[in-house]
Length: 239
Image (cartoon, rainbow, N blue to C red; front, side):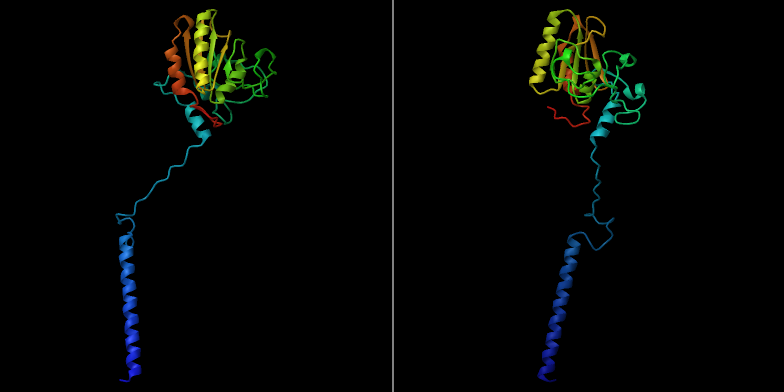
């Protein structure tokens, strides 16, 4: 055999060995990474289920329909009362241009059609007609219920009272101020349309009512802590 032929043979042999080494390395890598077989049988092939994130609208509808008896207060079934759901057709939160009869759900209201023609300002007696929501705060003049229902749609808590007992009003104002200072979205206002000598607290679809002479601040606290901002379809910042 000529030296030229021997050189070609050696080169071919070297190339074959190199190809073999590369192939073996590939097999090792595929095995280490879990490939080379049926994915269903591979111990490293784990299916990861992705759960779609709940939208603000879907969350609001879920809360509106939640009749869990372990939650504070009484559940008010707005979908049954108004024949629809939040943001649907019919809409439990429609904006209207007339007075609303909330007696069908009991007083004070815990949601439903309401006003929203524009900003109200912070003085109820001179507020524009059909305005809503009211600015968060403590008031000694009444707001129309149609205005304050809009506050509940905006993730807020409304405390209503109909009492002549100034000591009860003072307690309510101190409680409301504490919560407002902590960043709670809250309105406190008188509401003479409900039963006399009564205090109530509401969020969207839930209400707790108590006699004024049995005012229980701890009950109000529990209600706020559990339910404030729970219904928040428009993603208002909450604390």
